[in-house]
Amino acid sequence: MGRVATGVMVLISLLWIPVIQGSKGLYDYLQGVQGYLAPPIFAVFFLGVSFKRLNAKGCLAALLVGFLLGAFRLAVDTPVSLGMAGFAQGYPTGSFLWIVNNVYFQYYSLFIFVVSCLTMVVVSTLTAAPEAPKVTNLTFATVTAESREQSRASWNRWDVINSGVVLGLILLAYLYFTG
Image (cartoon, rainbow, N blue to C red):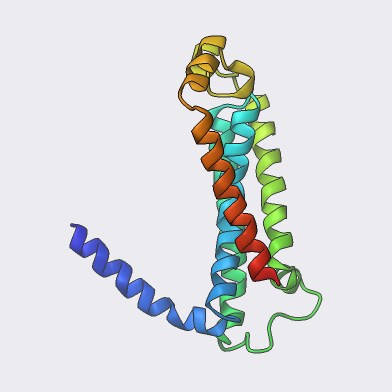
């Protein structure tokens, strides 16, 4: 079964090459796709560890809505980037699809993030809150003193020093490559 799945994915990848070639380049294409798919995942993780009231139904709704918004944007962008018949000049100026297609991808990613957050909060508020034992030690507000002590005992001074060294190296690399 694994070989069949691999074969199918290879075929899909080969068929998708024209889409990538029609974009501004591989890097821009990958950034766009990542920008459409990552915001709901980040929203669920970030808000999930920050607020104990959020529940699974809200998280699932946020992931689904975010995915649908991202898939919609990909579906709108793909015919234009391929220059398909009728889309070589893009969508009619001023139309809804033209607006969606011409919004900068990072702004659209922010839109997906905000909508995902709102969806998660609204759905979680309208459904039952998770039981306290189920969220113990999963959010900042529900961490117990015992868990804090156990976490603190799991690292020492050298871990902090090594983390500082890694952060310093990342900063140096950033400064080097930004000129």
